[in-house]
Length: 337
Image 1 (cartoon, rainbow, N blue to C red):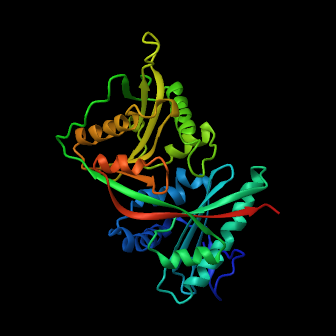
Image 2 (cartoon, rainbow, N blue to C red):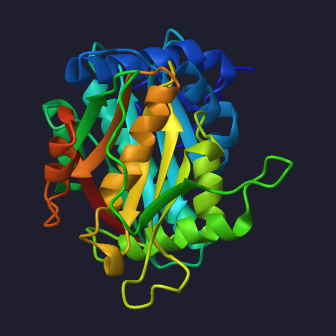
Image 3 (spheres, rainbow, N blue to C red):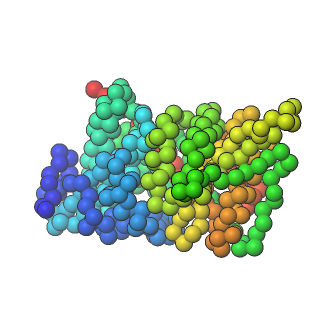
């Protein structure tokens, strides 16, 4: 099928169209080239990219590729309908082409238009565009500034090595951690999933840029991850010292995914305000470290807000995490007109 032309202000004789499975090698190459200078590795999970363009992850995205006059895919942009009022933006451009800045400007303009359409579909009057460039990527940051975005936050991308015989400290007395329960057919118990969602929603309520995400959206989005595994969903509970006979109270949750090669990445960790200071976060992280060690894998990754007043990065460093690279959040608010 020949590429169709979309109303995008690309250079003369360029075209744009939705991505197709045949584009997979080109899209993997674009993401690899975007990543390698800032992370030290150009390794990209092709199954994740495939899921984004023709799998579960594609269902909540509007996407476009830009094709040069010779028919070569030179750019890829995706607008992710993350939740009501929040739209994630990802742009990859082949910077070897002379018109790279013009292509970027055209595709960022297209994302704003698509985000308005998503907001309109949801019955909203506005939405927030959220992009995550590498902190050292001066080119992408300039393209974002030119497109009306502003930098609002810095994030540390951290990892921790795990020894196969490592045994993290047990939780403090009065703190317990377990995986979400499963039925005999392997599916998780709904009540536990609801509790995970509740713990994370309440835990992040006082954090930067917190926003509500419905339970169905939350579960569906995390199930879209190629490394999704119900065994990587954890709950923490604390005893009530004033009511020793009462049932332990839900205190926090952690959701991780399994990366290619078997290591884990912590997607979310949250501790409810009523349980902070009791070692709940350390207990949840210890459960993941123990799980990775038992599987014979070698690392756990996570992201932390470098500007957070909670000082979470201090806990991670104390437990052996170090920063691999730094990303940023750049936002643009758009109205539906």
